[in-house]
Image (cartoon, rainbow, N blue to C red; front, side, top):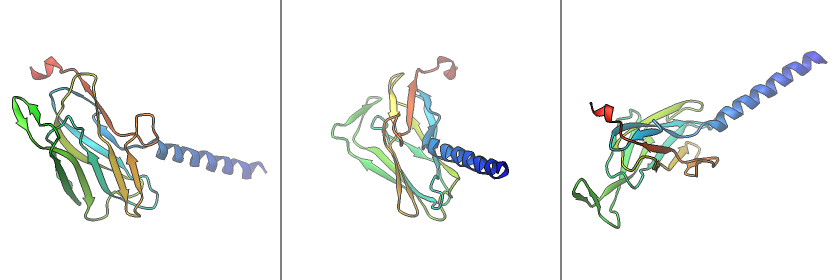
Amino acid sequence: MKTKLIPALLATALAALVAAGVAAAHVKLDPFKAPTGSDTRFAVVVPSEDPKSPTVKITVKIPSAIVAASFEAKPGWKRTVTIETPAKPIVMDGATVKSRISSVTWTATAGGIAPGDYGTFGILVSVPGKAGSKLVWPTVQTYANGTTARWIGPPDADQPAPVVTVMPTDPAAGA
């Protein structure tokens, strides 16, 4: 009787660990902290959590304080950028900006991100804001089977939006 119980307990424990690992995985930005005014490359890190269907599309809403961005080429993915005209023009470095990048969507042209794998998507921006402020990057992840994971909630939600904390400028960084 003991010999049958031990493998059953091990299988249950292993299943719990795997489920906990999947539940803990979230779309995130790396780094999650950046100094104000810096030009920073962020990696949008996307785990593919559906055990049977690959991730085939990622849409990231760019924080409204960010006007422009550059995107890293991603082989096997098509990128679409959405531009918006803000209700109120933005003044930046003495110039008036009448449009801004509001979102970016990457769509897989072949395969996508396989179940259990992750992908990264590079975005380069000049970090706006004051030290301590937060840049929220709501993200929607779409799987080949049509289901979505909406990473748009507050930090304590089951599907929190990725957040970057703005840090003070490091005076030594410019030296």
